[in-house]
Image 1 (cartoon, rainbow, N blue to C red):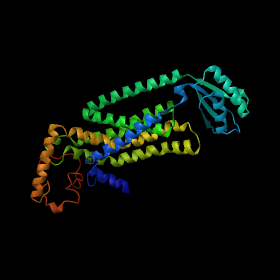
Image 2 (image 1 turned 180 degrees about the horizontal axis):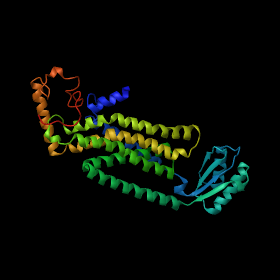
Image 3 (image 1 turned 90 degrees about the vertical axis):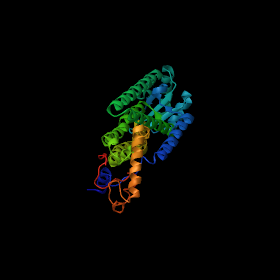
Image 4 (image 1 turned 180 degrees about the vertical axis):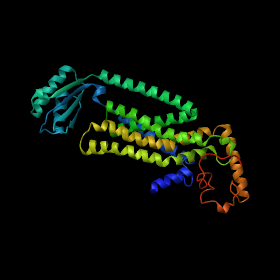
Length: 360
């Protein structure tokens, strides 16, 4: 077995572990700081909306020796609007100019043809109305709202309302960070971006639901034992799926990183940036939120329950009594406990699973 696989097995059995839940205030602070940065970036810089949302004209030229910067200068001088020019793999150019009507678009086509020295008939022109982009945006918002409602309903019935609330907050966290990064980086927002944002929602929930499922199983009959508090059970469930979450995230990020950094950056296929950036940031944020936000937040909400508060008092009282006698909770000599095992259930006894045992 590989080292990573061996670590995953030890995490799952509770032999080793990191107390994510106990340090939840730190993770909350980090997330709030990142979210505020994203919101400030969005408020100050705003989103660079693509032509599909603002309306305008798109020109695709055949192979030409004119540089993209020169073509951008020609288009902006003629149209009086900002232009975005991308070099295509065929040697041609893709020129976007916003705020154009049909008459202006035809006139600009002739000017571009003369400026880059190619026949006007060889240039493909497409006119995009802003109403089309508005329809896409409205449908995207509708789809997002329906998705959120269905997720909350499903998680509330399949698990409990606290998990539904935590998952919803994690989703909003992921979306806010992704949109904020778009504002800070200045990448163009296109329908591909919208598709990427909707795609990451499902992935963001994937790891969260896996942890919640383990937590639901581990917390079954939790009040009938006095070994672990709810937060400790949540932490053990999180550690049990940690390596799996890391593996799935890395595997998902590798091809997306190839699209973003190699396809969009090195090879210059700028249109790949539209969807790849949203996927890359969203996948990373989703993995982060499932580990550092969703599960600790569930534990926070659950620990407010009077039953869980009473359980915590019983667990701590039993540990204090055992420590006074120089024994563990199991009645063994304290000196025989493996290193770290006495630390509030963070690292469980070797060979024991995360599910509570019967009350002793």
